Length: 388
Image 1 (cartoon, one colour):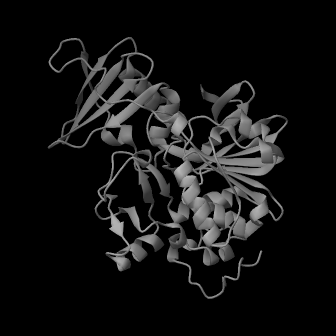
Image 2 (spheres, one colour; image 1 turned 180 degrees about the horizontal axis):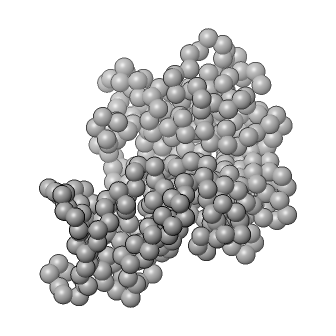
């Protein structure tokens, strides 16, 4: 499709990340629709050197603003559901512009073709909707945003950029039946459940692409589901971290259910598991698997204190908890667990299971969604890992 609204795609350089990540048919869109056109004057990009989100104001430091806008980093655009004030980061990031390489990879997973209709869940800044509109045309793109203010801002930004997809203010968990069926549905927020309404609103032979994960932590993965015979099934493609759909956030203040320090209620033991055994090698596979095999549990890895890093586990349905304290240079680490579930025992069993299956990577797992529920599987759909 040609560059829209008089913009010229030719000659605009593509940053280095936009090489292998760009699937066929997307290069013109990324040249013609820069992320910078959809970012606010005050934003909080993730600074890789400082390992945190930092405030950047365009009028105060235009060079830094431009550098971050073009960089392959996520950019927070809203904190605390819009209640945050000032330039310092807020408590919880609640809207953002994703890493461009992740955007490109997920659009590649979508595998659109000319004439396809797409529903996007999670409008955010509007950049993803603009890329879709450039590729497919405004009339073929519907985007839903739960935050009315974010939706209004995105609609205005899209119009100024020359795009007019259908921008709907509403809960994307319900999809948008008024414009269904869709050939493709893509979620740009993390979900704990693929609603069956999305399957119902996808045309037979269509596809759903979404970041999916358990409540265990932030170890989500993109899944691509193909819809047929009233069900959707497919494999996970890559590890990601996305802000969670508002209706599916996990609200738990760590420590609420833990008995006061110094009580003798917890059962002590030791483990020879290491931090890498538990937290993984950075690929996200181990936490992803732990979430599958230890359902209804949240992991919270605390900041290191001197030579010790506590890693907590909290049951979501009862007061069970466990904590392991990893200590530098020590062959064994102390463990305490409390409550009707022995969460640490479940975690150790999950690590053992993963190893017994030849350390499967994320792309060996898949997800199936039916009218009766969903399940994650390993290698083939008839090998469920855990019921969801």
